[in-house]
Amino acid sequence: MTFFKIGAARGLAIGACLSLVTMMPSPSHAAAKIQHLTSPGGIEAWFVQDATVPLVAMEFAMDGGAVQDPPGKPGVSNMVADLIDEGSADLDSRAFHEHLDRRAIELSFSVTRDYFRGSLRMLKDNKDEAFDLLRTSLTSPHFDSTDVERIRTQLISGLRRETSNPGSLASRKFLEIAFGDHPYGRPSGGTLESVPKITVADMRDYVGRVLTKEHLKIAVVGDIDATSLGSLLDRTFGGLPAKSKLTPVSDIEASKPPRRDFIALDVPQTIVTFGGPGIKRSDPDFMAAYVANHVLGGGSGSRLYREVREKRGFAYSISESLAWMNHSALFVGSTGTRADRAGETVEAITREVRRMAEDGPTQQELDEAKSYLKGSRMLSLDTSSKLASAMLQYQLDHLPIDYLERRNAMVDAVTIDDARKAARRLWGDGLLTVIVGRAPLAAAQPVAATPLKAN
Image (spheres, rainbow, N blue to C red):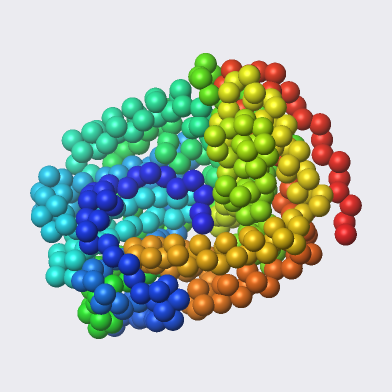
């Protein structure tokens, strides 16, 4: 899982061709067939060949997401993702999208903090045209002034709406508190000050530095053989520059809790965002933290859900999850509540997090979390697109190609002592909390957490 993915996807909506999506064979069967393919030109991909339906899905990513935006101009990568499919080669924006529509090809681009990502889905018979449209998007985007200004206007309109959106304000303030001046602390979608200043030259510079073969990761699932896929990968990605020119990004640990900030906004519902330093995906304690975190904040059976919603009725829903990036990690959660109950809600969350840090999960909670995490993950890989997305994420997380086969055993291996240790690491210092709404009394600074004794 990556953190705060930016909604820059363009092209056909994912739901436009739902009739094309059918169930894959059992996910464990699909995972057993993952191949490490290397094209004749040296392009590497993880690949599952499956002819259940005549559909091909591809996900890919390149190092250098929003952290590669130039200083003072957050939002460049986001604009690139929005504009890169607005005309390329000899096709203007309208003609490009007519080609997509006519062949029911789904093509979209997005950015996360660390990656520029693309997604392509098509019927088997349309694969040549689909891959060609992707190729020209990556290698010869137009960035015509008419399209640039149209997209810029849309982005500015969205940013203006965010100024009165409590969830957006809370998320932005939380990252600012957690990461300060680090690139992770910048708003990836840009600001009302930065987006008007972004030029075509900025976007072309980003494309030249980031969209290369050097850090390219690809996952493909569908009705295509290895030879045909290798040829298509060479044709699509072979013309990209060999080397990236990325600005170095330093590792950073999120600010240490406790801290509580309040943003006054006259809205019916108060939003609470909370979190703190997390555990990186490469950390030996990650799987234990993942399981323990499910006990605290993972869905309708979690402690936070029971405590905040079911017992006290403070909120309709509440969730909390781990978020990891290349250079840091967080745990982060959110809820919404009535303005007059915001203070009580924050204190209930704080108490439950503290209790988990001190005592960890029970054995029964641990066993139930393991059972859920093993079953739900496999059931979530029920389409070619979902499996391709998972395969790509495993590559980005530097996991082995047989990770899906090994994952459940890793979950099972987490002991109660492992889970309690991870809980202490995650939540022992308390919370960074941002409250947006009508309840200024809830913004009082929290009492510092009492240090927990090591086991």
